[in-house]
Image (cartoon, rainbow, N blue to C red; front, side, top):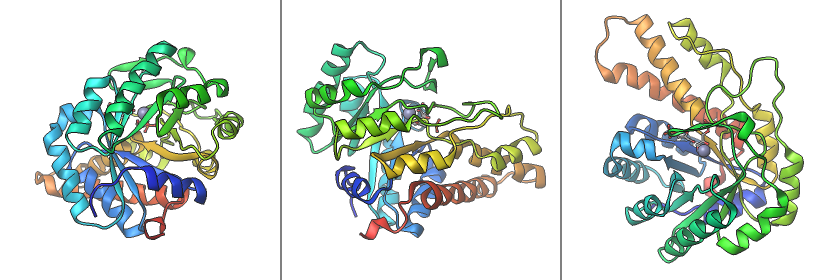
Length: 313
Ligand code: G3H
Ligand code: 13P
Ligand code: ZN
């Protein structure tokens, strides 16, 4: 199957009360881990690429690696630009074959956010590509931008109708308590999503797909492996997976996960070298990293997203 947009995935996810995982990719092993997991569970999946990933891996490599993954399976796969910073980066992704882009002008003033977003929508829609945009501000680090918790802002339900109708976007990322990165909350805190805001947004935008960024839950078993084998990740917790599942039953159709994948990948590599200090063949430790990431993606699909088996519906 060729790459698809998220349009049909989201329609089905909205109606079915589940969400599609959007997993960040940076290299071949990550793409394989995610696609193999999704394929075995027959789940649609979104592979997303940040500006940092494009800089690291070279956009041409990433595009061809994703195409190679697509050739190995018949599940629906979308290739999405994560946090496009401006019109030019969205245009470049669209021109190179992405089927979905995010324009993230959420830090810009209201009218500017609308203007940039609408320009991206015009360009994208003319080429059959769908667009995600964001209202509200998440705390945490994405690329080189760091938003302090005190500057984070929940999305206002009063703004969503005007924003979506004036821009023509296909999905909307909102801030309801998630945040980027692996150090979201301290142990003992009881992080909850503002599901009341999500519910209100759902009422204002019936049938419209909502996106959650910063949805890593910081897997404590994987952090423990990192720290057992020489790492020193601080004690931290993320959004409980049960909260994310509740959101998936509501209007949330796309859930972004990056940090948890990174922790799993790193945990496996640290463990590998601790157990085999003589190894120097990258296939040995990257193979372990791929396997641990695949297991984590399967866990998310089954226990958080609810998208297993949906590729065939
Ligand atoms: O939201 C940001 C993603 O986790 C991507 O991170 O910009 O370091 O690739 P990155
Ligand atoms: P996490 O850092 O919580 O994995 O969020 C990833 C994300 O939102 C990518 O856009
Ligand atoms: Zn994000």
